[in-house]
Amino acid sequence: MTDRFPVVVLLSGRGSNMRVIADQALRGALPVEIRAVISDKPDAGGLAIARELGIVTETLAPKSFPNREAFDAALAERVDSYAPKLVILAGYMRILSSAFVRRFLGRLINIHPSLLPNYPGLHTHRRVLEGGDTRHGATVHFVTEELDAGPAILQGRVAVLAGDTEATLSARVQRAEHIIYPRSVAWLAENRVVMRNGQTWLDGKPTSDAPIIDVE
Ligand code: GRF
Image (cartoon, rainbow, N blue to C red):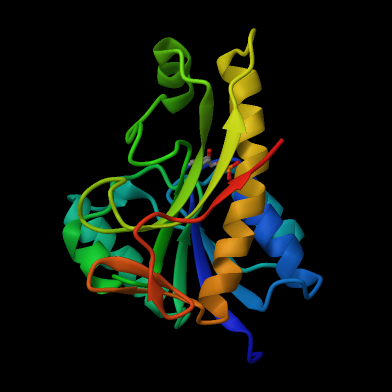
């Protein structure tokens, strides 16, 4: 037990965002303690990374439960057993039930690979390329019951370059993610950011537009 801000991370995939948050936390650059990393996928790369870093991991298999509500109720119990002040979705690929979202409202955040409100949903890089956009990025936001529509905390913006493919664009967006996610978590841990009346408040003021960082 430490007096650092306790968090739990949920993920389904490779876990690069979890890794940057964990690295910064372990070297004392981020005032948080990752109490557990929980996955719905036993083979998620992020679980292996967490284990290597000495972080407690758990897997909860959706197929062991009759429906989403039952799975999410069990997941919520597991999350709560670590008494986190923040639940960080880092590539968690299941849609959360309303009951789960309501239970953690204001302490549940996600990172989405687009400049929301543009491109909610899947395949954002492909859609950005098809749309001919010149700017793209990622958004950290509070999770609310409407998918990818909760109030934004911080955005990272990148250029879309001539010749970009989904792979090159996604790599550039991930560089932005690795900057904005730890920074957002720091703001929450330091109590500089809260969600109030459905809005993000930063340093005591409601933000109508989230701050944007331009990333090379
Ligand atoms: C990120 O692109 C994030 O925007 C999305 O899922 C991906 C997770 O990547 N929600 P990683 O597993 O953290 O590398």
